[in-house]
Image 1 (cartoon, rainbow, N blue to C red):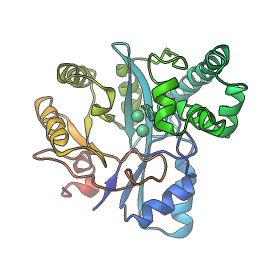
Image 2: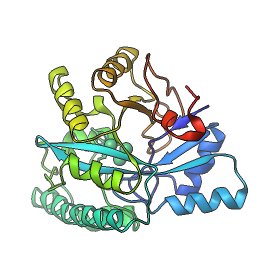
Image 3: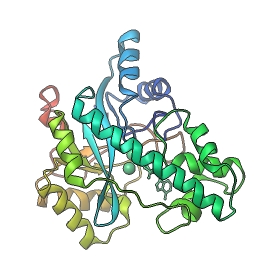
Image 4: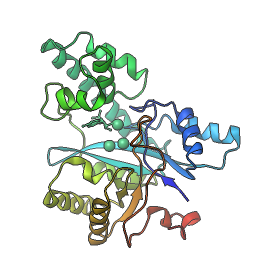
Length: 283
Ligand code: AMP
Ligand code: MN
Ligand code: MN
Ligand code: MN
């Protein structure tokens, strides 16, 4: 079976609509898909409705990817199987939206102040088209006006930490995200642990903090993750007694990241879905 428990749609910074994402997941033979947009669950009901309407076999897990701050770093926590109607989740995500909106205005200001572009906030907002705004929309605006050639360069030159368009945000701490996910019936997953540019020592420190804050699982499989990295994360999972999750973190079609692709684990780990009654025997 193929589980892909991390991906994005136009409801945040993905480029496929929830419907298009679902169609692609079906085409890629994904059996269980979690939609995990940044700080919003607005796409969940759209996909759920579509699955019912078309009578599809694919199972949707209600998910979200929450931005948090730990030791002055942006750390992402994926919530799986959350109750998206729970008042605590709704309230938590409303606050996240406000942080994103304030940050977006400030990103626009900074890029304009440096005479890099005009109408930056409006441009990004238009691309976000009512979705949860993020740096990905700014990247697409900078590409659109010809300032950079692609997404990677937009981040490298302007949007990554330390660059002129990077605005630190008052994200809540990891513990609060883990708590709200669990209060809403879900499990908390430390997203893409190799994605934070941390040394081995800091990775361990982060994993340890995540566990002691009550976290459930760590992402140990991604499309492009090299085997030694999978091995390394599996060891962290063993050492800190965490379940493992698998996700492509798909945002847009490309030749390197694809829904459901290469999501295998290195060794002796317990997939998070084994704690879900239906899949307790699926490895
Ligand atoms: P935000 O949540 O708005 O701070 O943006 C985080 C998102 O930006 C990630 O989910 C990725 O989609 C994207 N991103 C972050 N860093 C990079 C990077 N170095 N290159 C390309 N995309 C990135
Ligand atoms: Mn993203
Ligand atoms: Mn992320
Ligand atoms: Mn993601």
